[in-house]
Image 1 (cartoon, rainbow, N blue to C red):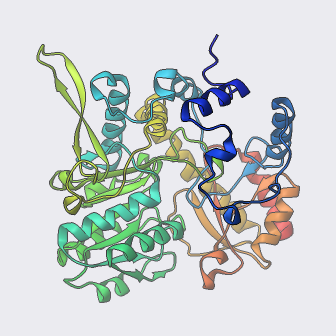
Image 2: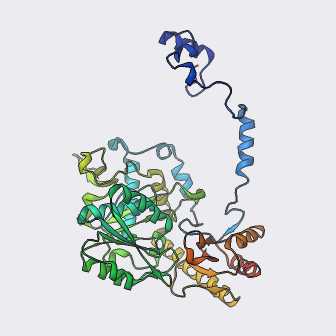
Image 3: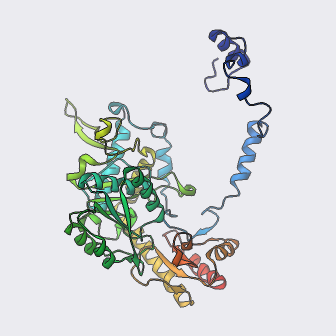
Length: 447
């Protein structure tokens, strides 16, 4: 019997060397001078048996702290949300789990339909006309929106709010460097984009104004006012949005956004220590041919039967390099499928209910902390995150909270010099009233 996936035997090696026409592996590499070859033994562990290696890796993995053991109040872009059980069941099916991407679309109808549904549901949530079949993550979606805006307007400057996730802004800076695009940060004031500063920075050489809704601090931006200022100078209006929040908030499309991006992680995707996740990218119809990645379309065959096809693809592998609008070379098909299954299982009412729970539970936690004497920063309307001020370093408080079974909030001092001792707390539908009450009690002790 041929064991296709087992390591080669010594006889296999001899047979291959014989075909090549050499006597040994050393002879195979004889063209490489002795002086540049590595001499001695590599400083790595000796190989172990499968069972011994599995045990060692499991012991290492058990050192990680996860939300099955600890109640998490950490967000900042990746959240502990409810995952319908059906998600893992569907994506574990071999026809989905092993599919990298539909390069042969005529025989990938199931996957194409699932991605088509993903696009459709994201359009409904964002209020946009067209959504692509996914991006790597929210950060790359955000940066790609800037690139599209620069290409569409033929301008080389983008304004990005300081209240946007710092990681997304970092990805944007990396993209912009290669494309020689100037990135200017619009200051935040009291937790939201400073409109006076924005108005001063706006000019007819700005390709896009880029904000987050809800923003990194959990606040709801004055999106209607920002849209009016942006379009007054004929710049593109880009909104990065948590798609779950759109179950409760007015979608950016209704405010005149040109591009809406974000991460689908809240729908059926585990936190997974930071990824992989699944970005989304939605636009108005006039920008459809500039969308990075790929679009799935619905059509009929010559017998009138419904079918799904790859339609527009702006990537450099399919058109001339100088005409390409994106360097995104793939999508997150499996994760997009997971998000599709989750959204389908929850339905419109379910998504609205979970969004409402996020808002209500975060509001309850905020009120309890305030009553306990904890200072709430930048009072105002927030979704499922808000900022508190501590008297001690956030890292010290989080270390103490871990001992009590809680994963604390995000240390804003890591990214903002003026926010030392400030913690960004996330409260999702997963947190119970009991967990919130105990968290408030413990936080009050160490704050």
